[in-house]
Length: 421
Ligand code: ASP
Ligand code: MG
Image (tube, rainbow, N blue to C red; front, top):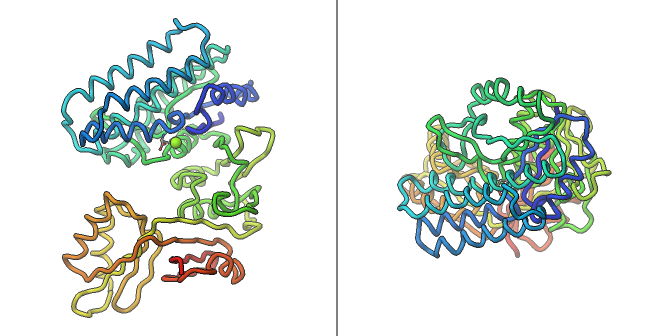
């Protein structure tokens, strides 16, 4: 068994879906679980739809029509027969969504979000599966919610590994006696009460890793529009280099610090079962890409991760008392309650500095809560650069013309919070 994941960029138009089929064709004799994301920027459009529905900012109907048109266009590029049942199938899914947003919201924003946004993956997989069947592949469409069970943390569902593992073993694996390929949705799961959940933006990689773990797959391949994992995002650097292989540890460190090539939660399940992760190009499937596996080789070059829109919060007790365990613990419980992720931090005797993403939804609430107990200062519009396998020359390279507000170094990793000078 191999698990493949195709992201939104790989299926953004009819040619993308055709290309997916040609990549899959290369694996004729394999059993494949293929996890697919929503097409192109559909998830963003569905987020807009959720806001339109919940906050009445724009007309939901307009947004829904854009989504409908976009998918119709893709289907027209794939199916010559306009009576193909996939048209009805997609249409009905969108009609259900239309009905759902005609009523007033009845659940929390996050819950409504998951019910709406998940539709992107449902329709993308319907289209991809129908196309593969049309091309003659032995392929079944499966609703991931029959297998992937989570708690009810909407927008960040926590996986029930036991139940998910059991469902995959008892209900999914037998499907392969009559099919070679299973197409299913990334990013979504379901609660015990049958509400749809999502696993967090870009969570399809994680879904694929969950399937790889639960089926003891030979490997997981994430098909991307880049040649593999590069030592920096080409958006920021001209002379990037492909990293042919890396350890799970380097991969988890890089993704944790913000390398967007793979979702950070993807690595752990694979590492736990020693399943290799291949990051390869769907444009050039002849190239080997990057293999993340159980090797000892350190990275051949320093890796850079840039994050913009950073905020540095500095927190100190109002009475000049030390930042000690009790304070630290109360501060972190606030971060956890507001689901704000710490990108880097440093403490001194009387203050704790924490660098986070500037999230306009979560941050103001967190700051309000922190201010009840502490003196809080913050600085925004900052950049955070993380360098794995740094040396002074690489630090100098990224810090020229910048004021450094915070510098945190461990043996292999340096992090710098900076502002333009
Ligand atoms: N479609 C979802 C998103 O755009 C999940 C994914 O692409 O992995 O966030
Ligand atoms: Mg996506």
